[in-house]
Length: 461
Image 1 (cartoon, rainbow, N blue to C red):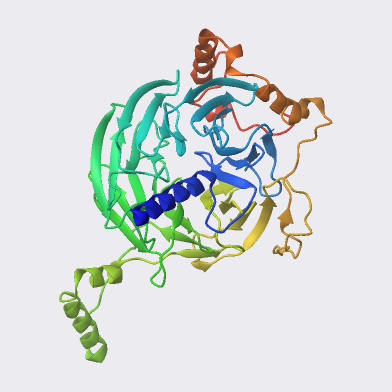
Image 2: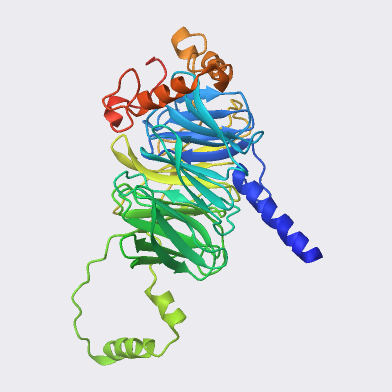
């Protein structure tokens, strides 16, 4: 009984650390970091509130919105719109859906247990508890379906496809082995179960079209890519052999040609998903041909787990972070017509790397920004850019002396804080969500056309 008690304490502790976005032994004012679905912004939850940063340039990190009302452990933005889903540590069972441009709280929902993660796309919002998943219609926030009695999921591990046509939800189908359960959120029915790993799952993600998934187990040594249509294994990559790690984040590029993986170590791996073009094989004579033939023949008699190691691909690029041990979110996207790797860490920094798809090996850090709101750079070790200048910068703050910009800053946050749900009637809440999802918009913002509502920047209001 005593050991069972210790095991339960360990599970609860890991679940709490997953909720706050902290790694064991790491301390930071940052609870949570994530990129939105199209990687145009970065959301950061802190001990005092949350911030949303624009990612349109590497020369500056503009603050789109800042809220200093309560400790925030989850903040998810819907693409480039002003719709955000927020969960605080002080009220971990309550989800708030807010319109940060207007400074209004559209609605809130309370659940029976702690909210561990929130996922959303243009038609669905999913709330993950330890043993249940709630699927909402994002246009009116009604609960369409509840998946109850799921296997214990203390980390809130789940993923929702960002593609509305292939609107699939993915979550662990077992707590003892790496089964992936995929659920059709459009027709509200189970689609397929994929036996991905022998060990329990640690990380999973969809590609942008919702046709492929990537998974990693608790061992963290092998990452696999499967087809959603029939569960076929398409790729298998080996992260390493020397040590097991906790994979924190997996992310496909928009064209599904690369997959990034970050963990609690200092290394971020980038894998190429393109099928290599097989060169014509010419028969060799002499000792070289003899050894090649002997290796191919002996491979047939080796154990399956040994031959799998020979068939696994290695990473195409390896990135080394300055500080290991923190939870990270990574993404590869195009900024200013160049491919960039973005790594946001709960150590309080955003790291930006230039990527050359034609080159393998390693690349170097070209820019980093502080995310914790501090302006004192004396504690930060400067990193040299290619031109020799210091690469460490603070985010460009909003000028609160300007009335228009101040609305996005402190006074705007005050509007959000002073706008309790009780002020809005039920009809007003429905109207707000309807306007938010109308296309073409009527006094609202569209969810189906980002061009109609591009990411805001200071001074545009």
